[in-house]
Length: 149
Ligand code: IDP
Ligand code: MG
Image (cartoon, rainbow, N blue to C red; front, side, top):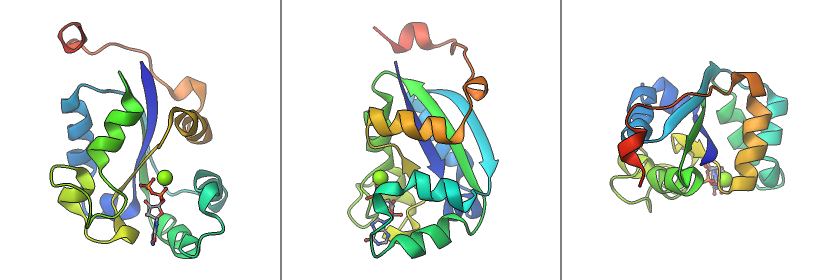
C-alpha cells in the first residue's frame, strides 16, 4: 500500500469541486487517510514547491496558492502515487486527457485545480509537511476484500 498527497487548489475549492474530486478517488477504491481545509502559510508553500522556487512562474504560483483555502488530503491504496497522477492528468489542462480531473475541469496551466505528489519520495515529504502522524487515520474500507486480488 502506498500513500500520496493531494491538494485541491484555491480555484478548485472556490469552484465547488472538492466533492467531485474526492468522489473520483473514492470510486477508484482509494482510502482517505487525512483531510483538512486550510489557507496555506507562505512558508509551507515554499517547502511544498521547493523544486520550483527559481522558475519564472513561481511568484504567480505562490500568489495563487495563497489566494484562498486549499483542501489537503492523503490517499492510500495499491500504487496510489501512480494511480492518482493518472486520475489528475497532465500539468497543462490543454494536454490533459478527457476523463482526467484536469482534462475535465480546467483550461489554464496556472489554474489546474489540483496537486498530486509525483513520486513516493515526494509523497512522503509532502505528507509529513502538511500532516502530523496522529492526523493519519487507520481503518479499512468494507469493499477492500473485493477491490484487491
Ligand atoms: P504538476 O502539478 O503536474 O506536478 P509541476 O511541473 O510540478 O506540475 O508544476 C507545479 C505547478 O506549477 C503546476 O501544477 C502549475 O500550477 C504550476 N506551473 C507549472 N508550470 C507552469 C507554467 O509554465 N506556467 C504557470 N504555472 C505553471
Ligand atoms: Mg509537481
